[in-house]
Image (cartoon, rainbow, N blue to C red; front, side, top):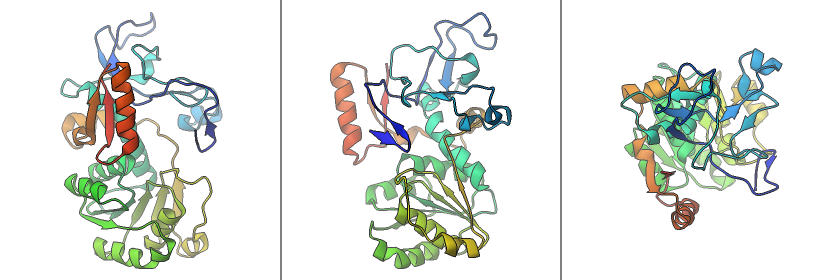
Length: 301
């Protein structure tokens, strides 16, 4: 019932990946109209603090974010949201794809922080939903070769089908670390310039730090462990830069352009669809909790 320092202490409406159709606009909203289809950026920052004024509003201490305690989320028939956080969908982008802008934004922000580009080979640790959208983002940013590692064969097969150049199955055992790094580096066939840890465990972060070339960069994306034991000194003496991300900033316009242009296709990630009846809601959460072939479980309200 927690992620990092956010703790659920009382019943809460969840949901923060959403898109919808505008039913009403306030007097000050000029760029949107009733009937517009929009994707919603779920965090409302204060716009007064040093982070907001400096352009890093995702770090705002007074952020009101969907489904982050104590604020309710968007799994509801109607919500009220600031107009400047509602982004009109291109005609060829569906509401479902619009909702996928939220997880895709994590991948886009990670690639920006990690300086992914056309001359950077990329390792991704973790082939879950965030690992997959990070892989798609890295490709859209121009990464010429992407290797992805995970413990699950099905997730690796999905990653391969979505365009990973190579996949490597790893274990959860720390004793296997050295051999797995060798296999990952062999799969890359050259230096690993950037590693993105989309799982966030001691072993995945250790793998990223040790596998990345001297002078490379590691970006911690996942939050599996609050505290880790990792070979930081070894990374430091090789001048491996370590950066983190927290959510995202200024990503929705680029995400929508990636979707509009076809540079990124998120539709294969939507594996299950449900309505909003009591029975369907319960079934949807059971499907998501079981994992297996479920990646993104979508509600159509």
